[in-house]
Image (cartoon, rainbow, N blue to C red; front, side):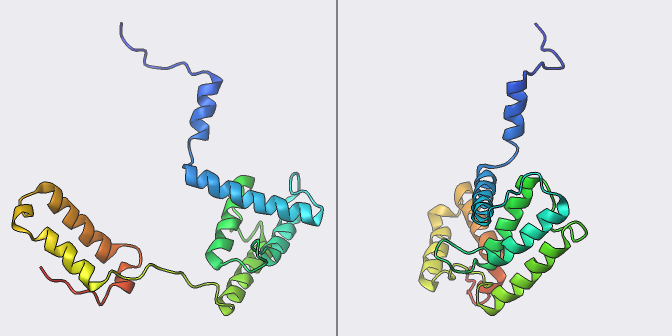
Length: 180
């Protein structure tokens, strides 16, 4: 029997497809951001649900400058950005829209500068690979028995790409030697 061109999906299957749009890490990030925002709102005795855009903007302005970690410290700049993004995704609003959210965007920029002054804006990268580790790695790639192996060649190319073009690879790995 030939397959039908158009499938008939029930509402449960459609719901499952819609829920699986976002990756698990995205769902977790949004959930954590919303939990922090809800905790903030409950501590202030307000509810964000059903607020008009101007009222939500004012609440977000206060949230962005008053939110702290569980230890009472300022969030790092990237973490504050993630909180803002997660709340926006949950609310289904683009919180970076300066026309809709002028106050909270102004506060976000100001907090970015404040966090920079407080030393909370630097990104902590992994240290570059040690010279001995690089020599060991390239020694493995250059062994006579490994030169004709497609898997080793693929590993070598991937390693070179990650070392040279990986995130912040050029910045942190400029002093790495290349020895064929």
